[in-house]
Structures are given as structure tokens and as C-alpha cells.
Amino acid sequence: MARRRLRLALRHAREEKGFTQGQVAAALEWSLSKVQRIESGDVTVSRTDLTALLDHLGVTDPDSIGELIEIARTSRRKGWWDDPHYRQHLTPATMRLLQFESEATAIRIFQPTLIPGLIQTPAYAQAVLHSWQDELSDEDRAVRFEVRMRRREYVFDREHPPRYLLVLDESVLLREVGGPRVMAEQLNHLLAHARDGYLTMRIVPFQRSAPIAMLNHFSVIDLGEDENAVLYREAQLTDEIDESPEDVQRYRARFERMWDVALSQEASVRRVEARVADILSSLDRDEPLRSDT
Image 1 (spheres, rainbow, N blue to C red):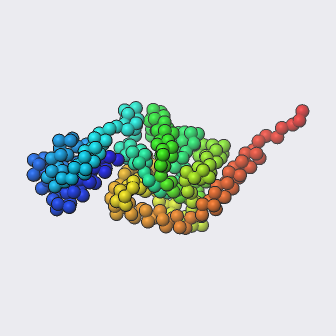
Image 2 (cartoon, helix red, strand yellow):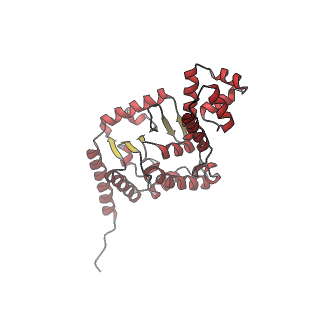
Image 3 (tube, rainbow, N blue to C red):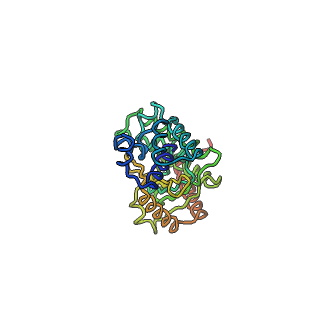
């Protein structure tokens, strides 16, 4: 996050001066790729390099310089997700997602197939990961499960948690991941989050979901300023972070359209409650009759 704030500030300062990346590289006797990596956030920047770059870009205000130096220092710190125990089992996009979630001011999620990982119960998460046993090793699945359970505290348990807006296709309610008992527990967990104010939820009913259900899972993550937002997309075992403002805006608009056609929060809660009641009723019917002998 700090690296992202720094690179956006440096790019803005360069563009204000009207310099190209090539001109900056030539003036500082750096390679073009070094400037590109700094502005893309792929590398950290040393204090010496940052001071030289700010001087060339005409940033002279002591407070601004001090703030950017502090941001650069912070960017060199490592988060819990950087531990080798986690890092070797996670995709680069997933690691960046963990960073963005921990700083998010708002998270908008559309899920057409599953309850999102951030609010999965342990049993539901285990069932989802078990379905990938042919593609992921036992260690991969174990670490991903640990990360999935840990990440929620960095989103919901901090002083100022983000607004969490969730749109689910109705098929998510009917797909009994892990069996009826696991599914009932998961849906009750979802309801508890909605009632406690952790999330605002809307269900897109089948009557309105034909074109919507063809979309893959995506998240739009706001990080404060309008420009400072990212898009996370996931399909099967692949995922990516997209920082293109045009793509972020396009998916934000898609989310808002789905939000408008979905059931209200109150109606969505009732739909989930009815599904839980159906599952529990089926379990009651399947219980073997007991005699009084």
C-alpha cells in the first residue's frame, strides 16, 4: 500500500513537470527499466534514489519530502503475508489482495458461484479447497485455508473496517458446498454478518440473473481517493490485480447495475433465511424415525 501511494505520487510529480520516463532516466543516469519499476510499484526505492528523484522533479517542500521519505521507508516493511510459510503457496495477485484488503475503505464483491472467501466458515472453506485436491497439494490447501481464516481479522477487526458490499447470484444459496449441514451453518454465518452490520448484501434472483451469472467473480477495492482503487478478478485457480482506471470504472459500473436489479437487503435476508429453513427441514425429514422402546 505504501509502495502504491509512493508510485502514484512520483508519477504525478513527473507528469506535472512534463517529463517522460526516458527523460528522467537519462537525467539521473538510471536505466529506463528502473524508472518503470519504481512507477509500477514493482520495487522499493532507497532514500538516496528518492531524494535524487524528488530534486529532479522539483519537489522542494520539506513537508512533502518528509512524507514521501516516510512512505518509502514504510514500503520496505513486510506484512504477515510475506512470511515464506505463506508466500510460496500464494499467487502474487493474492498477496497483493491481502495488502489492499487490509487498507480498504470499501470493498464491492460480486460472486456468481460461492460465498466469498473473506466470510467463509472453516467447514465451508475446507470443502471449497478440498474440491481442488487434484490441482493443489495438501500443503497448498492447508496454507490457503490458514490465510483465508486469518485475513478476516485484518479487514473486519480493525478500528475502521471498510464498507463491505456483496452481490450474490441466487445459485450460491442453492449450491450445497460441503453438504446441507455445512451449507446451513455458512448461510447462518452470512446472516449474522449482515445483521451485525459487517456487510450489506443483495441477492440477484434467477429471474434477473441470466446475463449476470456469466460473469466471473470480481472485487472493486477502494483505497481512499477516487484514483486509488483496484480491481481483483478470479476464475478457477487464476487471479489478477488490475489497476487500470478504465477497467476499475467499468467493473464498478457493472457492480452498480447488478446492485440496482438485485433484491433489497431486507428481501435478500429473507431469501437466505428461507433457504436455511429449507435445508433444516430436509435434514429433519432425513433423520431416521426413533421408537420409544
